[in-house]
Image (cartoon, rainbow, N blue to C red; front, side, top):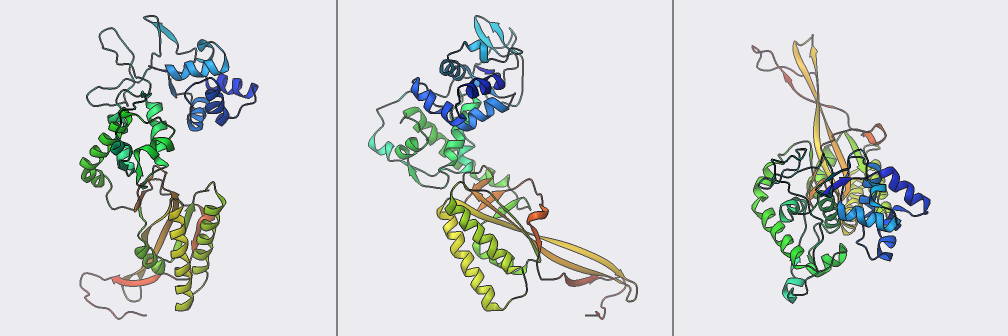
Length: 374
């Protein structure tokens, strides 16, 4: 069962005690012997008025603040049903299809399927082979978690997925993965991961079909990157802000080299030197679990030539470059990022030295050739 809580009240209780969000979710929970809550989830609880918490999580929050549960619940939605708390706009799942996008009110004619807390019992019966079993997490596999753990609350699924994303594309044993995401080694979770992996493999073809080759898909193919860079007339760079200084310095050097490349027409030796530096920097970036992704677009301009009686055409190539950590949900594989925003920022959009290139004109139907004025 999941309920809405009073985010402002929880933030007030936390601030009154001088705790940070991270301290509340980790140290203070540990001190009470309670399950930790991620900082991301605390942020959602405090700021997202539609966010639903499991009843267990609400009990833990009330416990750590030493207040009654009713004090932190959203009073507008709290009702009593069969001596248990129930949110009248509880999100129900269709048990067969596992659809969570329909919001319904409970009624006596419908069987109520309450969501369970995402807590698995420790199981010491895992074999050495199972503990050392290697998993390689990707976004397709993460997308199967809801089906693999159908009784888990959605907020716990989101939190679990976020923790898995920190280990995307890195072959890792189950034992190390469980330790890395802060979970006890569990037979239930181990077999859930197996199911996620199998479902991802079965759905791989369908998964790729959902991602047609379009301007929203960016590649990390280094060879094609330099081919595109050599043709580009203008460029757009969108880096993310990393937490560590090492990654920040690498990203800064990449941007500086691309900016240098577009300043003016250069000799082949200068272009070769910049590309060599970029290869090394991109490799360093990947060692920090960060990727550089790009795609190319063509802009076209036309103007009718009154003198010669045909349409003159020009084309320019535009390269979009996005630098993202692998843990981002938009990074689908190490080679593919899906960017649906398709936006341009004036501060990061730059014109290169290359001008527009005039291409074959559009001729009148009765004219097969033309003497071009260039």
